Image 1: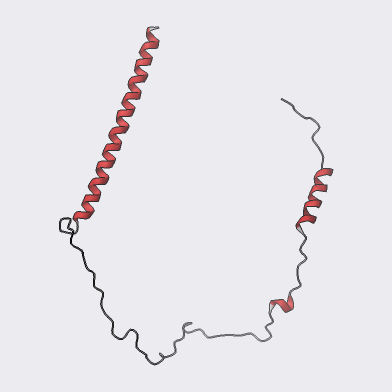
Image 2: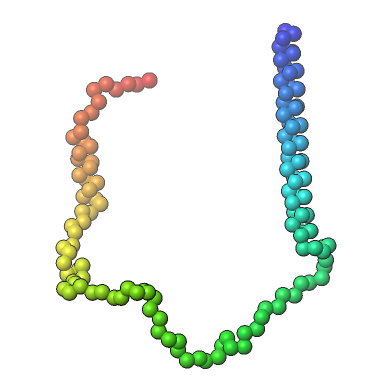
Length: 125
């Protein structure tokens, strides 16, 4: 009886220690995340300000004006276009494949299943 109460107290103490340990680790994780968030904000070199930051983009005056066509450029580099004599499209050469309908395939599989060898012993638990 005494052994049971000691193990019960030990179990409760262990559970309490695990809970406190988990809470401590969660607090430390939240603290580090908050520190990292403030550290990212502090890298701008100034304190948090309510002043708006206006971003100005460079202006390109010749962006929408008409210009003559550019010179031709070969994208293939040194290789050129080659074509063999007597090429024919695949639809002229290939024969269409015979597709078996799904229903016919299912019927064949069902017949094969019916004629398959059945188990000799049937176990019922």
